[in-house]
Image (cartoon, rainbow, N blue to C red; front, top):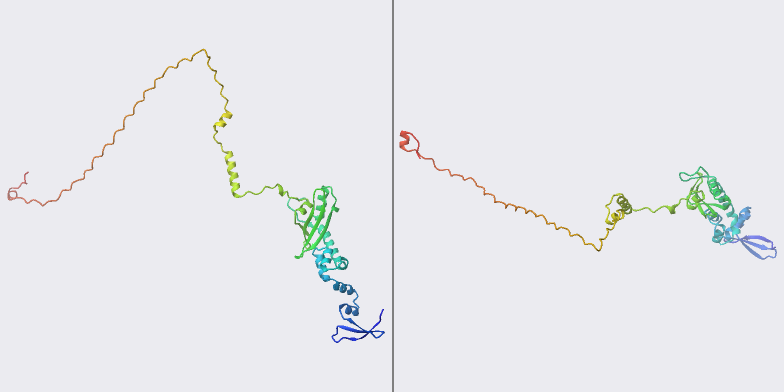
Length: 298
């Protein structure tokens, strides 16, 4: 190992000038690792080395692990190996496991009419016991969302069903919600949506009501229906070949009385209008009438 002695600092202050025992000059870059070593911060040397080898910072690695990514995916994004990121991913993976276990001890919001099981773990265990399966077939995991709540997942594989159930875990409220059909099956609350009939529109409902009303009404029977319920007529015996049928007497038709002709309508008499007499001049009495009296004789 060559022993170096500090000879000075470069003009820009970014390098240390060193000299070995033979008088050969060397220089050393002044970086964060050298400063941390000079201050005695040996715990940061590994982190600083990781920062130099990885594209992602340690806090970015932890944030991506906490949001649900696997160490393999984060290592690929950081362009490094899984072993290099595990010092930062390990604590976050332990946090995710702790949250998943805590969520199983929280209450589960279930539909009306469900049984009295209060916690998620008890509901899952009771349903799997009814299916004659142990709870160890479920692999739990959790990851934190941007809104602060956690998504809880349960990967299971049983004889009647396999899938990946999703729950929403509210840590402050200490409850979980069922997010999909696998989650409802896992706690024993499967909704048989396949058996539900599709809703009818207004026109189809009106037609259905019309058909029901027509079925209830008493419709007249046709000839075919009457023939089905009426007894079949018995055929009349045919007359013997050696006898002749008796002649039927002729019946004269009754005379039909002729209807009297309707009287022709008489014309109405013309309406006579009153004649107005013209008013003439008054007659003047004669002298004899004045002297001897009396009126004018006709």
